[in-house]
Image (cartoon, rainbow, N blue to C red):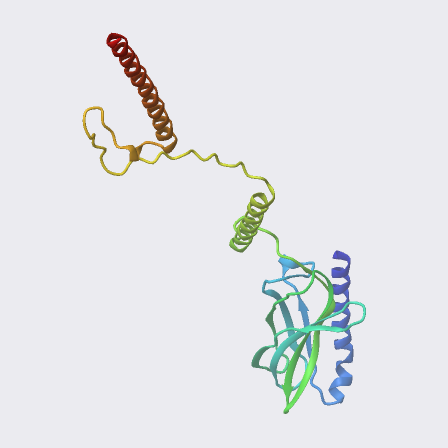
Length: 251
């Protein structure tokens, strides 16, 4: 990428020389001689264009004609480095300031970039008006490198992105865990239902059968029935013995 930047600086110098050499011919054709050369600031010597930031370039402009001109605007475009196919035009910056004959000035131009990182051909031009006619002067035509901005620990957008992605991944992991990992079954403890109301005794040793389980009642009824039958047999035996004794006495 640095090699392309040096090549771009070389081509920019060549363009400046071509404008200077071609100035007498253009003057004869009616176009005023206005020279313009664009260079990146010192902190960007390699001509890197950073995505998402305001990229700045300075235009050194000189009016070598004997006429006053008006600087209309500065604009540019990005092209494919090999096919020269247009990628996107940059936003034009309007000035509308006069440039007197023999005068020179330096103007800044800022543009944005939202391209895929790589090498592009950048073309910057200046449009000026003289005697009602608009002329265009190429100020920069070279290969530049489009790069992504450097990350910072204090970047709020970056931290927000990290938090959102972490939350999504955490939710997905929890969903997969609860869906595919078998969960331990909870043991259910039987609940003992307390009797509603108060239990009252019906007498000495009495009780209410409605609070006693049914199988206990059946057992108690069977035992009562068997006890009654046994006592009945004993009574009948006693009565039969008594009658036998009475019969023996009569005899």
